[in-house]
Image (cartoon, rainbow, N blue to C red; front, side, top):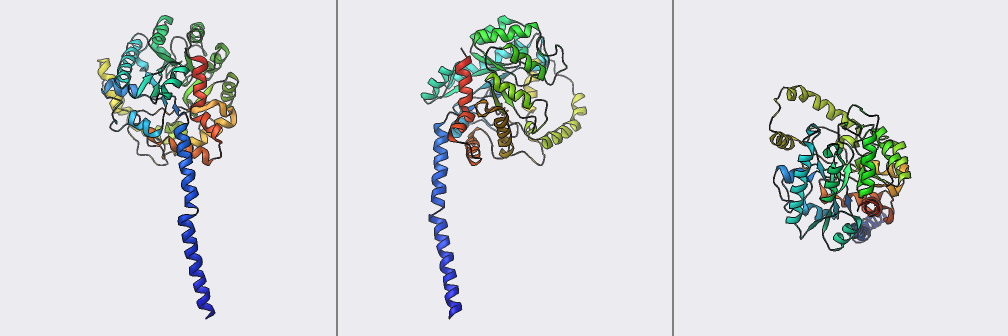
Length: 399
């Protein structure tokens, strides 16, 4: 008899637990999830770097449509609650010294036309006030940035022309050291900035263009910090303390950035996030490099660029793919060293490159908000990281 009572009590306890699990804890959990979703939708969400312009120019695609095999377009931005998407006009390094401006203008014109074509959903933004107005109207704000200072072909008048045409920021270098600044990937020419480089920085200050130091050498970064009167940004970089990639930022640079008042956009690019993955990718590329070196260079420059664009960004068959937790680790480290007022997001989602597990594309930005909340960040601090810090820069600098 006693055994029967014990068994019955066990059944009742189990049933009670099942009932609690169905109607108790899950309800607060569901409410918390809804709270985070509402918070994400209400916050300003800003991605400071994307190469969408290449798809627009070289594939003739319309950003208003859900792009095949892509990561960023208007439908995906809407689904992810992204309010501000900075679009980079990336200039091929081998076009310098006398063909890079031509490509920059081609990308600028193609992107401007596509934005105008989708005027009901997006609008070109130049200033912080523009961004606030556009977002308040229910549209997505799209500032344009030049990726690679070689686009101006060592001419201040071209810099002014790009600004007049709506470009609000410029990355000082890409992967070559050009006529006035050294890159992290290029052979040093000037030990940082030369005299022309300092004039370019001063002119960007005068024009109200945001200075972007992703891709520059360490010495160039510190020369820019010494020269500029305005806060600067890393639009898409990671933390060197986690992964000593040349494109990532040292703790000393993070501290200097904080003193300058600037912001680092934490990149999603897998080889920047994980040292182990970067090593595996390097080994895989080394296999194909001898083969590619035997392929004749296409003389038609437009055709060459189009072919290279189509062939880029294939997902590598590598294990240990970085996850959203790796991305959050970089954010945590940047916040620890520079402070929460100096950290944002700069995904660098190329149309076909792999992204971290947990972020398929722009539609999954809410997962970052969830991750930051899970790690204990306050609502106010999440708002700064997800977009508020970059808005401050554009309001302070861009004119």
